Image 1 (cartoon, rainbow, N blue to C red):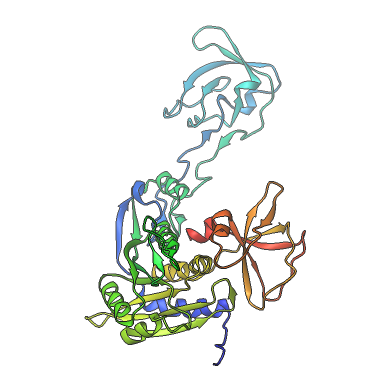
Image 2: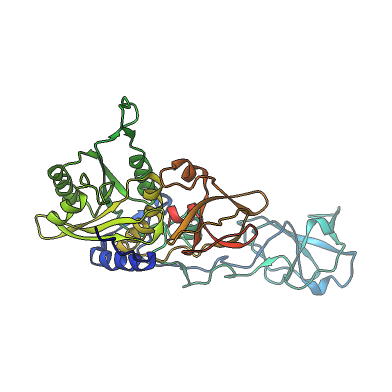
Length: 414
């Protein structure tokens, strides 16, 4: 039997992006900003205002003109009180205005003296204030537009909307956001050995963990998921599942059935129902990957991705490949996260000939600990880890060296 040629992850991702491009989701919808968490932005968000809209105070204190405070200990009468949300009167020269954080600075004032550097002095009206330190011009003043200028792009299309992004959109007055329609994904697993949690575990059977992992990953990525469950290891059943899934979905995602075993029918089923590319990627874990299309009755097609059945292989391949395809389908940038250079607090003396993605966790000393068992079936390693270390083929690691750390949080919600 001929050994299949391995291709690099970079080449595989390029092929995936090229294959996904014709299947880009063009439908968009407008949703309230408050309900847009996790959605993919379809158009740039522009600011129609300056933020802040006017010069304002970043401290509780007194607004003054610096020319009126020539020396520490200067006493100025207080001419007005300006809480946040109130626009004061122009500052009378030789006076101070009591002001609070966020309040607009009155015309004629050019600095804020924080209240800790002042003493209130009793007197008629609003009294007076003793300024105990000479203020610098512009101190504690937030300038108009210093955060966002009118007309600036504050959020780029293709960005997944995080809580802080929604806050930024709200700060420029964006009540509605144009987002990409959620990808519709059909999910199923193949394997007669699979049973669901809660069912009796017969000899030779295993619980279907991939169903839960992949469904959760898809939901975290903002997809609408139809779970088709477990498909029997038969060619006819697999073809029927693909036909059903293609009708109303953009992408079909499967796990298992992509190796070279006699009971692995997914590849043959995809070839019968559409087109197939079968990759053997030079990565560990996660080498085999099926990618293709399944025809619909109307002449269009749904994309299909077949992941390996081993739990960690399926998990890592999803993070690297499926997220890339989903982003390409939504017109978002497809490059993997840049990662962080961090210290390895472990040794890796026996490298593989493939590019490896090791399950690690950030420790209290700022380094990375390695899960002791890196097997592709050890799902404990994925649940324990908070990131992956990306190491080149043949690369050894000695404790103390710098490695490339990819946080799971960035990979999952790209």
